[in-house]
Length: 202
Ligand SMILES: Cc1cc2nc3c(=O)[nH]c(=O)nc-3n(C[C@H](O)[C@H](O)[C@H](O)COP(=O)(O)O)c2cc1C
Image (cartoon, rainbow, N blue to C red):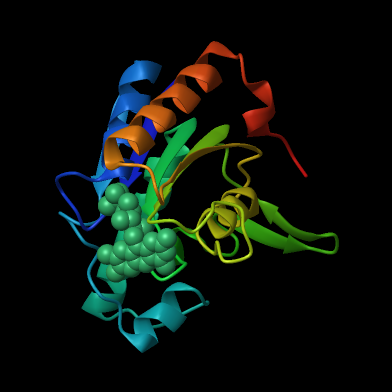
């Protein structure tokens, strides 16, 4: 088992997603590759490089080559993992822009997914994803949640079929209570006492 851990909270301290993601990877006890999208943000991509990286570009300028190499590297990190841990704070009902940049880099037609007559098919072999979503009160799974539901969609899109959500939403609860509840969810997931939390292919 090997884990790819992605953190995206802008907060380096006191971040519920970072605390829970660290607790989860330590509980899993397997080798971890960590990518911190706040401390090492991906470089901005120009409009033409974005189109070219996602097309059959014949351009070969240096910035295109760099963006292509980065996309390949990020996809390789996924290929080498069988477990993905995504820590996502909700910002304005959605994911942080840094995490969207990562998604734009890893979703590539013919590489991480392909279109078929039956619809898109994921090409990556990651077995499971844990999606840790922290909010300041917006309920996870509600109509206003364009964060955890979107991330689940992307995971399925690239071929990850086992998805578990860790709910770190908090409204009236203190940060300590939110983290404690998150840890309990993780303990239950890993002990198999809460199997319904892992949802298989829809
Ligand atoms: C820019 C920004 C936008 C936010 N937008 C929302 C939001 O739309 N809904 C919500 O419930 N909380 C929102 N929050 C609160 C965060 O989701 C909450 O503080 C969460 O714990 C952040 O994750 P973290 O603890 O890992 O940093 C926002 C926070 C920031 C900084």
